[in-house]
Length: 418
Image (cartoon, rainbow, N blue to C red):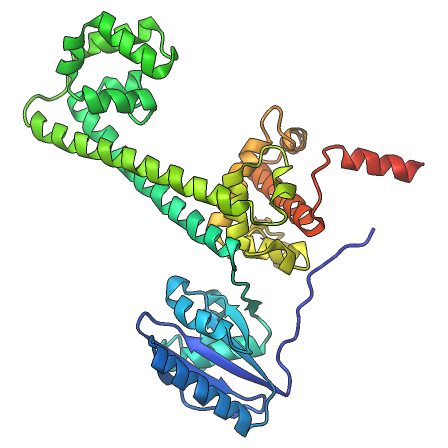
């Protein structure tokens, strides 16, 4: 059996100019270094077109003066602040790389034996890290994949806002009607309907048991039994919720309920757009053939990765997700294996929830998951292992543009035996 491992590609040679950027919100600091350690003092770059053009002119002149052929531009992973200048450089003949902030932090203390942090010191440290070969190539999503990344992040923010408002709503409902949440969860469809139209326990009591049951039965489509509705009605008649200042609380409850409904519509619209752009990804149907993986999960993963086909090995994808393993061992001490978490957090989250779905009774990883549990593996470690396995399968499906075959292993063993 042949094991495929990712190889460190040496991007720095005697003809490579190292350009580094210490990214800021309004001002970046640039720095040039030749393979012979000839450099210039870090200089300012403003977030304007004119400043970017002057930076490129200065870079081109420095490259020409020292007879260099290639340019590697590196910067720390700094989120949205790096996007304008990285987008500008992406259209230039340069190789963009990113440096892990943890690496620069450790190398920084070797420079002058001091943890001193300055805008003029950081670009030099980033250059040191790149020279050592500890940098990752930046794969920028394009076309539909770029749209999917933006949509996935927008959806994530919308879900966070909805969750925060849902928590506030439940707290306020508890103050005036503490029994409500024990009977019907406020953030469910039925709970939201009652809160929006009958937020006061008095208004629920005024409906009468029969009418309340009719409303709940219609909204929930018979999900709640008559006994449960009667329990809610009795609780409304004899609630221990506060009465003083209730009007002000009801005003805020109505506002939150309306905002949650708007957020739900926004999320539905985002998901519809994600499904639409997903159809433009050539290998999306291959990944969707994996049982238990939905369109939103696949759209989010494609957006985070950019293009699965641009990665040569599974190790690169695993590191991007922060699911690569490490251990801290010394002497007779054998450390536990853990995931690095130095990658895209949303990608890990999507894979974790996909793993939860895959280990259900009819999921493709149900047997594997329970085998690990029977061997003494904790539930969390088993789920992380399943997430890693799913990522391997997804990468293979996208790479080969083929459909998932649940019985592939059995067929392969049969062929070997034959």
